[in-house]
Length: 246
Image (tube, rainbow, N blue to C red; front, side, top):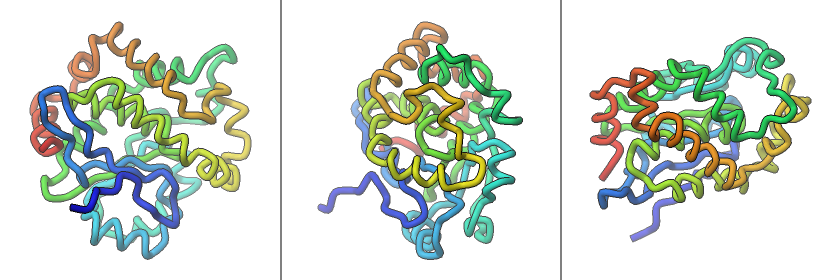
């Protein structure tokens, strides 16, 4: 049997990956071709869109970018499809208002994101859980590493994946970072983004995710405790597991 490919090669983005295949603590496995994570999708080609629609059976898109990013870069060719589009910004308003203090690490930034974005995180989880069981969904931000990485960690944890596999999934973004950074720096509005964020933002270091998962356990007792505290409905968690595991 041919191995399922985790990273999906596309012309218009660099960090489009399948969240499936990871074993869970109860002996099951995250379902392949159900949930995808990605960097920005606005530059997908016609061939890319056809592959996502026809081969991967993509039905839903959850866009974690801010309103300013969405208005600046748009949705590209996906806007002309019948895929359901959900704009769920994890932070909004001018980027300058989100600028962290200079001593903040990327793990600190992620924790602050969770603390401030409870409602959109809950909505993103619920939308993904509601994807029809025979179809797939993708969630994405600009780089596919930070906002997308935090949501991926929460989803995998809720599905029962061990922390070290969650860390490994996060670190896979490092393979695409040079291309992602070059692409972002070529787009209007992103030229100076790295000057406004912690120095380790340009990397996907495993320790960054380890620190976040430790803080998640200490603050909320893990992803399940967080989900309860931000109002994710039990039926949404049940659907996430029912359709997201095999």
